[in-house]
Length: 160
Image 1 (cartoon, rainbow, N blue to C red):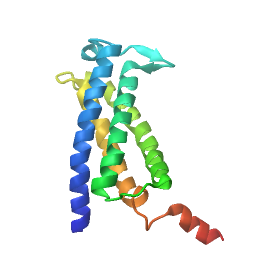
Image 2 (spheres, rainbow, N blue to C red; image 1 turned 45 degrees about the vertical axis):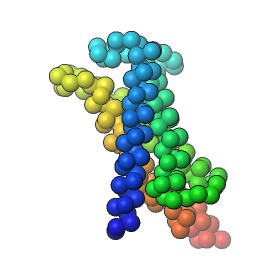
Image 3 (tube, rainbow, N blue to C red; image 1 turned 135 degrees about the vertical axis):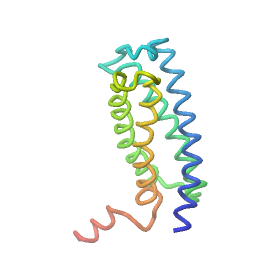
């Protein structure tokens, strides 16, 4: 239990700095694509139906993800080797988390009628981030950085 608490503490600190990177990039990109529209909650449609908020959230999330992989690999899970399978697992996990993050942000942006006294884009960002944190920690601990647990290996053993 102590080990899990220590791992989560390190994960949390790295995660907070990754969220800061994500939040900064989210706001910079959003301001570049749609200056001032975030205050009005009327985001420009940019590409294939995606709004400026979707693109800004996606860009920030991806930058935070790359940072998170290298920092957690080294400090939280203490993995020093290069492992393409682990990297593939990480990006599979983060692809799922990415979709949940974007959809969570999109869902929470609709709360503007309920929460008009605060910046909805900030609440949406935090809501989406909270969803991703739970998925990411669990997935990294149980699947990506846990060499003892391999779902594919268990399936192969049971079939062959």
